[in-house]
Figure: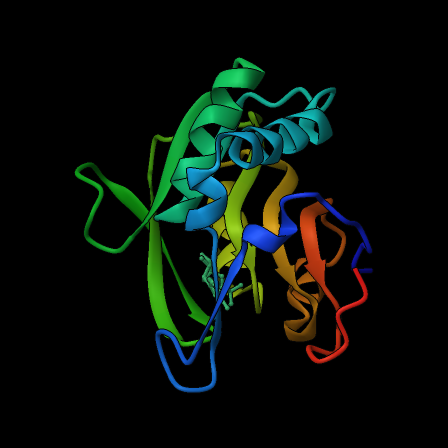
Length: 185
Ligand code: AMP
């Protein structure tokens, strides 16, 4: 279920219609990142939600996920592990295909990037259709690690990404509702 919450910096998220393709309403978090109070609040909230989960590694998804995952890992005293688009990582990789709101792509993780049984928090800026996050979960689990939570700044409830993460512990700071026109949060 999509949470109905309000964060004071919600208005800093910039809507960009038809980017990067017609029909997509892009949620631009760069004004959030540029605002010291909002950036630290977003990181602090995701850290607070993650405390007590015994997180060993924070997996950040390229590219905006890196910006959030790195300070969260630092604050949790955890390691940072990147999941990147195909062809970017220099060592042996595991790979997963996925579809997203505006296309299809492949994601990779270093084959030795996570020790078996390690506890992993997955972080990205936006949960849209859930294709990216679910592919990342498959990569983490293929290495024998355990996903103990998935944290996002923004969740687009109308794209129902949570349904592709059924049974997972998912947290978002700003959840846009199931009907895009009716924003009740
Ligand atoms: P999805 O796999 O459909 O959940 O898409 C999530 C990924 O694509 C995240 O890495 C986001 O950065 C990006 N993304 C998808 N849709 C949007 C959107 N409407 N606004 C901003 N980023 C998006």
